[in-house]
Length: 370
Length: 269
Image 1 (tube, helix red, strand yellow):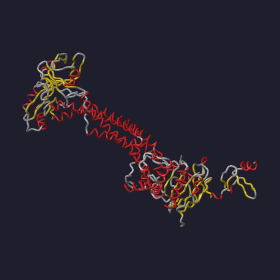
Image 2 (image 1 turned 90 degrees about the vertical axis):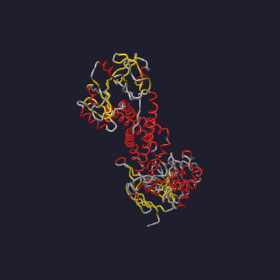
Image 3 (image 1 turned 135 degrees about the vertical axis):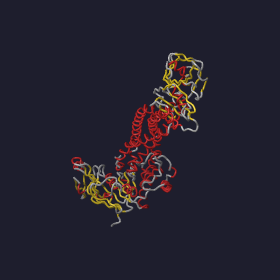
């Protein structure tokens, strides 16, 4: 008697008490939403974190030896490094940049940025408004500009100096930080440092592979670490990953515990209300294993529905949130969905234990008791 | 081997032990013929439900054997009992015990599913049974929307869906008005006489005696033939003359009493 029954018993029992089933689905959905949304938020941060690197046009990024990230990192190279890099065969161009964390202020409002000293003013990243910066000018990320109430022509203060906003870029800010561009020589002057750059962004000739060029640069130029753009972006993501892994794990645990509690409670109370039905079905000859499967199927269906609802909700959030808060970007990744699905499966197994244990104790002879 | 469908030998059921020990059924012997309707009556707590539960393979016996169509169900394991129950027994309950989440048809179909019947054939059989019971227009009704009589007919359809050899009915008319009670009695008789099923009814309803081939009295865990019992003229209780605590002779005929109190009250009249 292992074949499927033609009466969809589990579905009927779930639909019979719609209110409780919907409450269970909502509770489980909320628990799984914690896991999905948090992962999506961190994935969104990761995407934005490397947006500058991804759009910089560099094939190889050269940093001080031992440095392969920008976020929360310091790199200092002699200015001549760029000249040395250009001399390496296979290099089409090399652009030195300064990269420092800074506070940008406008009246009472302020925001943290990574200030990039770049003589091209952020090119080839497109501007969404205005023009590239000249001396005494700055390009802001649009979300920060909006937060500061700045538009092209407005003034902001950085390191105690006044800069006029010349233009805006878009899509480079996350909830953690933003990006702004000034001319490199000007930033060096403001900081009072000369002859030093943070990174050199290198373009490879078409016939040269980036990994090969990075290896050549490391061999030819002393005191540097050269990474391909992809490897550099990967390292950047790992920095945030390392910082957020514990938070994500904690939230997954919270989501799991809430999920088990909600699903277990719903399943157990549903089973209590169906004890008579289970006893009747057992008396009619339903095997214990089948009765357990019936109880588990109800929990599983509730959890799957809760998971799908949570997924749909995250999708809606991912579509709506950027228009409400441009820095809050949710990215839904297959791996994160799979992780939430495995949490859902664990919730099902754990929560199903409650009704299964109760069903296992049912005495079929109780059908004759009144 | 006789033609009996059911042979019960030396059946004992003991609950608890020590001071809480209760002997609900004591060394009971019984044979039930195919197509026979047997009504088991008796006071509350006499062991009727215990007997029915053991007979239906729902309760383990303490001692003795229950042979049903050549199989001693007392010796069947936990894995063998459920499929045996599904194939061999039909249960009818006082409270109908229909699955509220299912329609009338599905309540019958699920019994067929449990016994291995699947798909369109099971659905067709469920519909045919319900139609034969006058419930053709109630097939997809939720069972809680049905009247008591309709619910009992669904329960009977479910009980006979798998063509059981033995139908066990617990107070089948208790929750029904006289009209629906009579209808249920007719269906039970039809079941035995036309389908050849053996029907055991446990009830307090003496009207069921009209359809029964035999009426048995269960008291203190033992069966007695109702014809051999005498009625206490004061309280109306049925008493085994051999065990009557008090008796007198009146106009040359013996009168039996359940207690000396009843006898004294009778003599004081």
